Structures are given as structure tokens and as C-alpha cells.
Length: 220
Image (tube, rainbow, N blue to C red):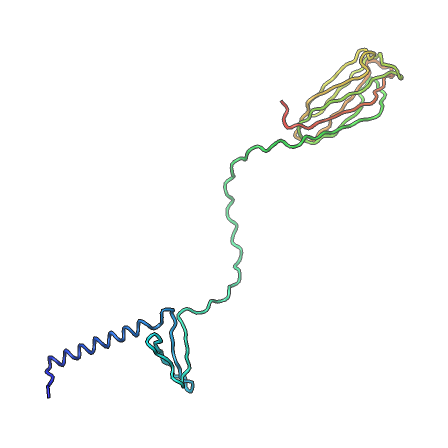
């Protein structure tokens, strides 16, 4: 019978220890498995639990129940929405945009009945306009008792800081009077056509007055 010397016995112990460590490392490396799941078995009667390595063929006994779990729990429910945060500071003003296209043109058309004239300027026809730029035309027929007026008549077109006037010395040749002007204002305003006699005969009549104001984009 061969006897083990101390040197040989020490070597044998070292080999066994290394082998046991290697086996333990393999077992440890496979728990949990590659999917992160830990497999276990527990005895139904008193709940004794043991961990098994299914990768190494481990399984539960007939009197045990399989139980699996992992490191990551189930996803919880979404929590309630938090309160609205404080409004941030106003950002810097952006760059000025390009000028837009010119909008559609609008027109105001007004007319009135006959008006007896005297030496005081009397309103013949007028139009109320919004703020903006306008080109205004006005016309009126001047007669005397159904005949062309021979008296001097002064007609004025004014509004929006502008005015035009025309004096008809002898209406026999100018029964139809026409005036036109540019008018503009940053606020609503009124344009008026008015006429008066140059003498106090009170026999001149202004008939068929008409005024047309057309809004424009820019006055040049």
C-alpha cells in the first residue's frame, strides 16, 4: 500500500480546492440566467426555498413548487401630472417681417338732393371715412331757377387736412363743377363738398352732387 507523503497530500488538497472554486464560479455565473431570471424551488408544506441553476440541469422535486423572479420589478403606474411651472421670461423681440402685399382697394360713393345756396358755405354732400389714404372726386351742377346761374359761386372740397376750392364767376359756361384731391388721416375723418353764392341773391341751386372716395395704399 502506497503512503501519501506530506508533500503529495498538500498538492492533492490544492488541486481539489481549485476544482471546487472553478465549479462554484461556473454555478455562480449562471445564476441569474442570461435573461436576468433567478429560478428557485420551495417545499409546499413549510415553504423551504432553494435556488437552482436551470442552465446546469437543475429542476424542482415533485414535492416542490417552481418559483421564478428577477432583479427588475414590474413597471409601476404613471404618476399624476405635476403642477404647471412658472412662466418663463419674455424672449427678445424678433426681426421685422417683410411688407405684405397691398390689400384690395375700397371705395365710398355718396350723393344728395338739391340744395339752395346763399352767401354762407353750405354742405352739399359729405362722406365719413376711416383712417387711411384716399383719392376724392366731387361734382355738382349749378343752376339758377332752372336756368344756368350767372352769379358767382364758390365751391370747396375739404377734409383730412387737405382742401381744394373752385370759384365759378359765370356759371353759364360751367354748370357742372368738378373737384378732386388727396386726403389722408391717422384717425377717422369726414370729407365735405360745400358751396356758396358770391352775392346774396339766393337764386343759385346745387343739383345732383356726388362724391367718390377711393382708398389707396400710398400717396405719391
